[in-house]
Length: 104
Image 1 (cartoon, rainbow, N blue to C red):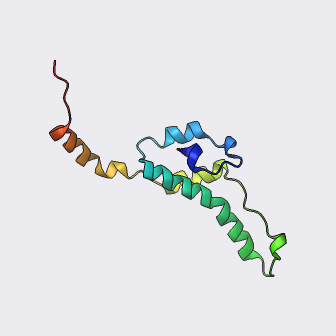
Image 2: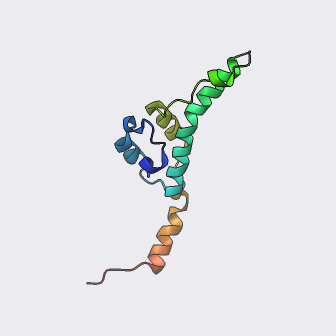
Image 3: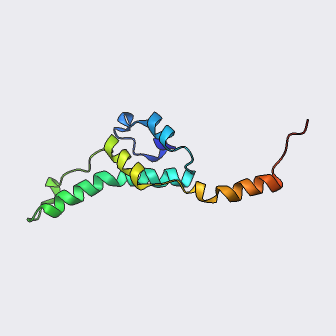
C-alpha cells in the first residue's frame, strides 16, 4: 500500500520495511491517511518558505515541491494513530458470537 500511495518520485529512499513494522494494527484507511500526511509535509515546507517571502515571486522562479523524506514519514507517524483498535472489542465479540470454530 505504501508504494502505491506515496508518490513514486524518489520513494526508493523511504523506509518501507520500517513503515510496515510501525503500522501494525493500522487499517487500510489509517495507512492511506498516513501517506497523505507524509505527502503534505514537503508542501507545508514550501508554503512556509513562500509565506516568509515579502515580495511576489514570478511563477517561473517558484521553488519546486521537494520529495517525501524519512523525516516526513516520521512526522506523519507521530501525527497519525490507528483507528481499528477503537473497535477491537466489537470485532472480538462478533467473532465470539458468529465466528467459525475449529472442532476436533
